[in-house]
Length: 350
Image (cartoon, rainbow, N blue to C red; front, side):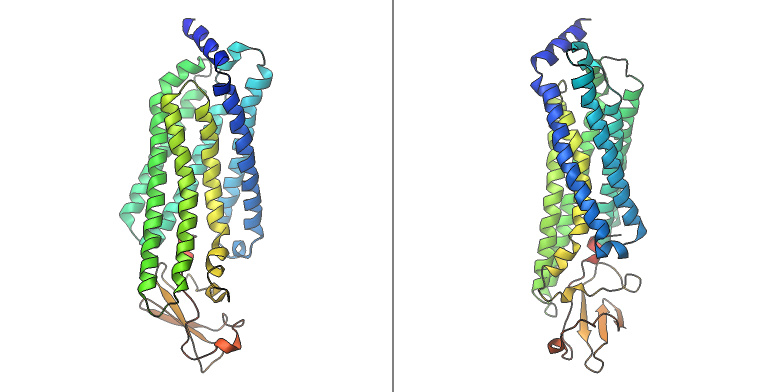
């Protein structure tokens, strides 16, 4: 009874740090959710969506649907606290079911997006150890994120503050693993892309702007990954220092939505990264994924004997295509001219 009275008094004296912050969290997540909807629409209407493997299309659709569901849960949570329990102090200590439900959905979204980025790391580096370590951290984070809300579902009749004390070790472990996984992915992506950029600049047979293309990709990767990492860190700090407030919900609402937008940004920026570094759009020449190995520097040489034949060399493999040079300007049809740059296709998709 004493703990309940003290909890009610705390929530009433710090309404700005509880229901006020939670309400702002719903507002901010609604804005980010709108961006997610726009990016999802842009992806499905883009030409690249037609050529992507079905797994990526399903991933984008699944992430959007889960993100929509999480937005519904967030709105329900604060409809319960602000409307149904208006002027009811005891209602502020009731653990509503939509909070753990939203955490479950967030866990699924973050797990899927992080696995996508880990696959990108593997395609860039072919480093199985880094990929496996990242996958293990991501799986451990998923287990903790599932355990926390499942325990909450079976304790909905317990005082909210008492429930948080019981589950704090699991919640803090989950957030710590979230930060570790985000840091690992961001650092590895930046490192391996920088390595590819350095190799591209050292090659005399590749245009200098190939490095600019990879630099643009590095900036996009760091920008999207850094924001998610900072929010995860803020969520962990808020959970450890202010467990009685709703700051943790504010940041928790945003984590999965930022992960979803990082995924969509990486998919929608593919044409920008390639064509933005080449005003003539010659870097848009596609190499068949089935006939070349990923993550190697490649160049295409125009065959002077056949104006429609383009030969390519990738590592130890060679080949040619006759259907990729139809839009080539006549002034560039000189024998032996390099017409494509470092291939970064495998940095984007599985």
